[in-house]
Image 1 (cartoon, rainbow, N blue to C red):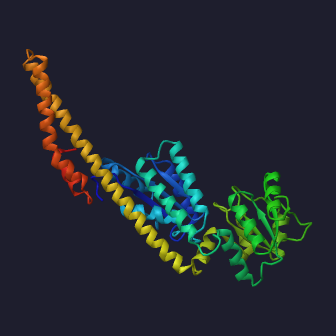
Image 2: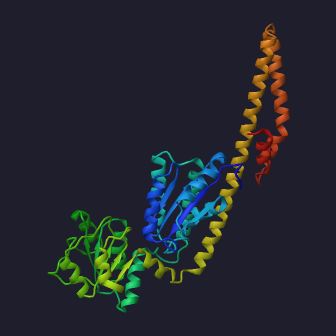
Length: 390
């Protein structure tokens, strides 16, 4: 694909190459760009997608390059399309096949649509990507895993303690907190939920046969074995509570982005504190399902090829429309000039001239339009645009 047709441009910043603080700064910078973007945000990534028309491609690439931090990838055309599909399929996730990314992509699309930033090209691309994502999940050999599963597994492996019968405090009752509570319960742990809204804490706790605790559990009860934090904003606990957690050997997994645990508490916990980026490194070291990965890779390849073909053919159709419109404008201009010079032409003569010129234009355009209809590679579309300055 070239600049002769609309294309897709993406800026990808993943925890593998771009740390959390830098991703947060990038998020703010992207919000300042005068560029219609779809922004996919997760614990481990921020991806920006645009679909500029030919005159705007270079400007869009330059705008994204200007805010790209070290380690981010600037992708254009087929590479950007492939990345969007891999993201939605779960193939590029820290936890392969995790379900959350589908919801996060849908949220990104809804936000872009509401703001009037969702172009037809991106609408088509992400419809294909979400369809691929749903298919890829149907091939998973077991239940989809989440970052919460990875957090609990990482703590189990590092501590050498089985999670059966462990006391787990989940701070937050949103999407990630819900996944954490369910993962802990699935592992046989005793779950307690804390949330700023007590009613939501109670609802989540009830769904996992757990209990409810205040946001700051204090020192009057035994410290939990594990705390999983998944909230927006700071998890504020008293100094005495923090010291109690440190003394009691509690492990803390902070799945919030940006981190919710006070930096001083994180330092005091030492190796017993893990954040989302550290979990990404742990999860990346785990072996995924190789058969599933190969199958999804083929799906990503096929879906990418379909999108490239659609975009190329869409460009051919656009070139055909532009050529027809150009021919009609020129025909009308010449007829207007003729009628001004020959005002005495009667209605029958004018109708005959109209019919003849339209028939002549149709005959001249027939071969180019047929060629554009078979333009699988986009070469004819580019040639027509160049020849006629479309």
